[in-house]
Amino acid sequence: MRIYEAPHNEFGVVVSIRTMNFQQLRSVRETVRQGFNLTEVAHVLHASQPGVSRQIRELEDELGVELFVRSGKRLLGLTEPGQHVLPVIERMLQDLDNLRRAASDFAATHAGPLSVAATHSQARYALPAAVRDFRQLYPAVTLNLHQGSPRQVAEMLLSGEADIGIATEALTQYSELVTLPCYRWTHSVVVRPDHPLADGQPLTLSRLSRHPLITYDAGYTGRSHIDTAFEQAGLTPSIVLSAMDADVIKTYVDLGMGVGIVASIAYDEQRDNHLVAIDAGHLFAVNTTRLAFKRGRFLRSYVYAFIEAFAPPLTRAVVQEAIDAA
Image (cartoon, rainbow, N blue to C red; front, side):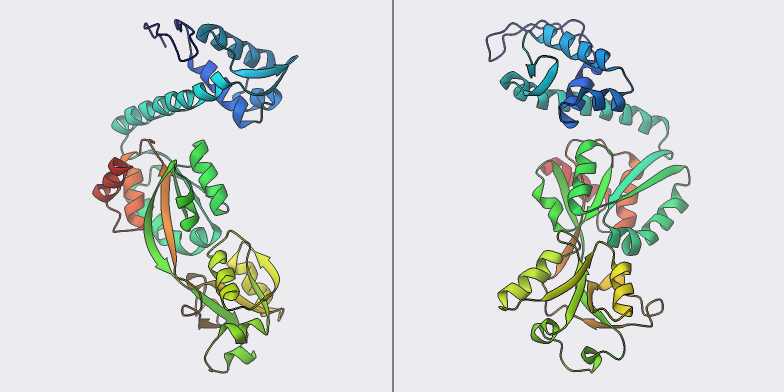
């Protein structure tokens, strides 16, 4: 890459860039991502540690400023110039990625990779039909499905590991992401048929609080709404087990360890006929599943198709409008 202008930057240094290359930029970005551990950086970039150090030094020489605080050969953090330069490096590398994706999109509009990050509930219960329909339309697209907490989903989007992410409202906490609502859902209480709560009487928080509860880990599948409801009612629930996975929760309910609180979509009358589901939509706040992607990321044509397969109201026009407004 060659840049021919040589302006003064805000630190009073003349920037003359003639031989900067993208590997230098990747070395800087990955050094920050790996906590300034050059051994890990070299592993991720498939390079040698001296090679990474050289790339960083060459870039600093080109810019005329030091990007990292050093103690001997160790890197301790970013300097003030480094903190200003890093976002520019991130944008340049994203633009390079978008350039490649755009060219690839024109060359092969019906083939290529698609990486989707989702929480377990979405991957297990909401995504299968969309994946099936999408595969029928785009059999040459290679799908990679990653699972994690909403925070992990967001991190995979921000790092570029995933193209799109599907999780709860927690995704809206990240300003670097464009998020779109897909559908709303509520919780259900699941018990064994002989459990006292299966007596047909109205379900209340007070009745629930008298039994050991099994539900999601903090940060998963509307757990915050569950905690908030009990707190506002002045009740302290006895949560004896928490898990990321609704199937795990139902397994321990079936063993008689407690009452399960799961997303309503996680209960299937035929598959889970050994358990009884009781609607808890009146007890806990309604949840919204959201779809997200990194702001500024180029989306191939088939990514729009996948989004619409998962959430039909999210047509390409709707998604593009959200991108333009971001």
